[in-house]
Image (cartoon, rainbow, N blue to C red; front, side, top):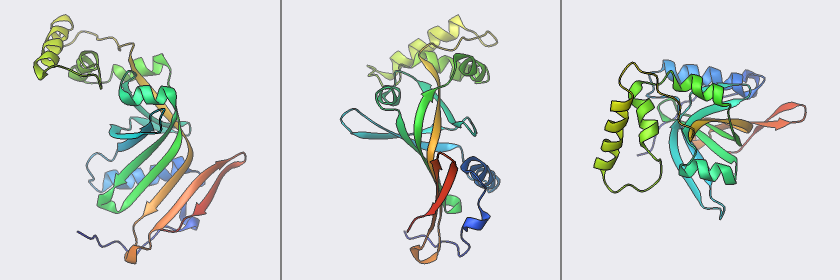
Length: 207
């Protein structure tokens, strides 16, 4: 199950001045390669006792302020972020032998921004955000289907569905961003941007 990696690597001289611009380069290349859902990222959080948990979420937008995703605030990840906003994001672009690893702090985005995004979601996804009390126990699938059917009757196709008050966006402001490039002989390139008072420093890590 070993993979063969590319000979061409990642050099400091080829990096963008800051990590969000570099992420744009790699994200566009990943999307252009035909990689399935390059915006899928693994979000890792930690409970108050230090126990970690991870799940896949979708990146919906990003800029120099950070990476944005949306979820139920009452979900496990939402509760853990409320207690400890320090999180990690991992973009596992295995098909192009690349990874991007973000470490930073998650913060709520504004309700206006959440509502604007919610209006762009498919009707079924809007109803699903209301129907599912994410991460809570449910007796049976039929209970979820019943709640969804009740919401579909209340908000038929074409009718505006308000954003649930318990649902919204988080922005992860990066403290560090590592760009990992697979190389031959397991001598991978790892270049990490680290935030400083003056901007960003870049350091090379051993593979």
